[in-house]
Structures are given as C-alpha cells and as structure tokens.
Length: 282
Image (cartoon, rainbow, N blue to C red):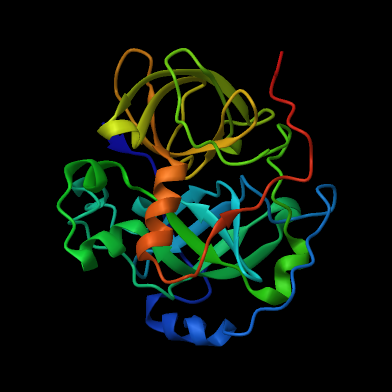
C-alpha cells in the first residue's frame, strides 16, 4: 500500500514557498465576502483542479481537488492531508509524518490554465498530532485537508464535479460491497471519468477499498468519489499493489466530522453541485 501524491520538481512553478507562508496567514482573510459562485460552464476552479503544495525549494506535491466546502461565507476546496507531507514521510501515517504548517500557500491550477493561490487551512494529520491521537484507525485512514480560497476569487468557483455532475449531497452511511462508485481524475487523459465498485472497508468504515478503471495514479490523490446516488462519499488516499491496483478512499463524512470537532474553521458543510448527477443512476 502506498500514498499516491506525485512529487514534481519545481523551478519557479510556485511563486511563494514555505518561508512566505505568513503572507497568507488566517488573519489576512478574516472578513470573508458573501459568496458569488460561477456557473458550471464558466467556472475555472472546480473539483478535479490540480493542487500544488511546495515541500521544499525544489519539490512540490501534486494532487487533485475533491469537493468544495463552506463555513459561513468562507469557501474551501478539499484534498488529502498526505499531499502536504514530505515525500519520504507520507507513508509514515497521519499521527507521525511531518507536514506543512497551516497558512502555507497552495497553488490551484484550474480549467483554462487559470492559476490561483489559496492557503492550507486544515490538515487532519497535523490536527491529530497536536491532539496526541493514537487511535490506529484514525492514524491510518483520516486523510483530509482543506485549502482556503481567497474571497476575491470565489466568483471563479463552482462545486459541480466535471462531466459527472453532483455532488447531490454528503453520503453518511458509507459503502456496501459491490456498490457503484464514480470519480473524476484528469491525470489519465480522456474524459477523466472513472467508475468501479466498492470492495471492502477498513478502520471501522473510515476507509473504503474500491476497484476503479483505470485505477488512481500518482497525482490523483485527493480526488473525490461519488456513490450511486451522486453523493460525496470519499477522498482518494492510497493505492494497493494488488492484481487490480485497488485504491483506498477516506470516508468523507467521518473525516468532515473530525474536522468539525477538532478543526478551527467553524461549522464546515459540503457545497452541493449545481449540475445534476450523470453517473449512471438506473
């Protein structure tokens, strides 16, 4: 089993590095504006956008955005916490791996080449370490992070999953074996749409093992998964090196509940898509 963020060598891809994280400290956006979201047709920042977290002067972690979340008038886009860990530490587990500090700039590469800059606002791994968490299921499977979006750029955002539509809401009952799942992962080319089935659970339902075609590859970490009703069910976290190259998906409802209990962002909620789900409901 391994995490599947992708490390990329950076020349001047990310304009500001870890040393300037204070430039985007939480106080900089303490008074968020009223949200005015873009339509799905015109939005440039959506689920499936590329997120780059600069790990050091030459290396960044490349991952994929899952869903859009809000707390009051503040807007966030999600991905995997392990995308903020040093490449040689991301497989160590959420309760021990070193991660980037909150406030670190995260580059968002959206549709039509648009580039925006957010900041790391929540990291489940960092939160668990601060709390001294030792619960094995949490340390292994609670893999979720949020990037705060600049309020001035929220009119470029739409929460709909490209091609698939949705999410129609938040799945709160996990996945059953054989249940259909869908994801948008643009790193494999084509339409980016993937489909498959749930295989098994781990960690008391905190992780769902899924078989999708084609399987997630490095750079797909953080991608969002929808269930058969188009509800947001999980976040791509791991790859299993079995015959089917199955993937491990962090349960979103449980990860979001942990963020609401121990994060510092107020009451976080999933923002539903504005487009109907088109993933194959019978």
